[in-house]
Image (cartoon, rainbow, N blue to C red; front, side):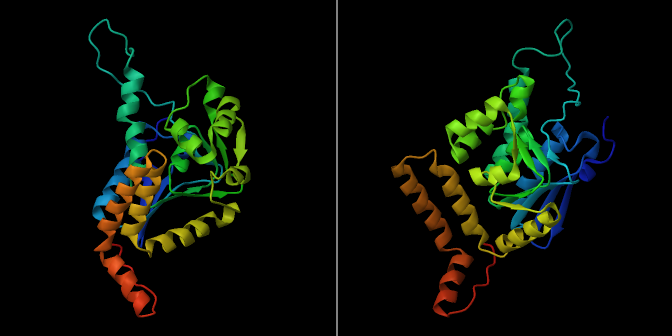
Length: 275
């Protein structure tokens, strides 16, 4: 059943001081994402990076059972084909992915603003990767992660085959993807997929605590740190040296870098501006 609410109600943006909360709120489809909702998350993240209205982003979902089960399979793709041509032809899925989910995940991974996933329930398929692409992951104790693709005879996508081996290694990735078993939040934390597991009732408070700590920190240096870490596993040593020198150069003359040195010399707490 299609959701007739405005897109702003299905993917909500709530600015709380220097923290932007993006909430998936689509109960009629269990918080699954259709293309307009997926694109709104992407656009919100990109816009926040430009507007500088926030210094941390929390990505979460409404309800107590489901974070995001992946793509909304009820969505109907409309095409205008020449007469006699099928509605779907070879090349369509690839093009839809390049224009769709593969614009969302780079927005998360390349965001200068740190992003925290607050996972309130089941995160499956693309929904699991949506959380795992974030910089930090806090999960409710009732949450679980499912590489659901094998259950449907599908190939993993949404950058899962890129993300998971870098976090947990190839062997465990293969186990999760081939068997498609539920992975409880506590086990996900043991593997390093999740930073912290809290009682469901405390999830928002935990996300508030971490997001405010980040939002009150040196935002530019955080963004450069994120860039270096994300580059590290795909970069040779010589290139990494070059990247680190660029990051240090960019940060050196920032207001926060000056403040950090001044506060150290003056033996006081720094007052970060975020630029």
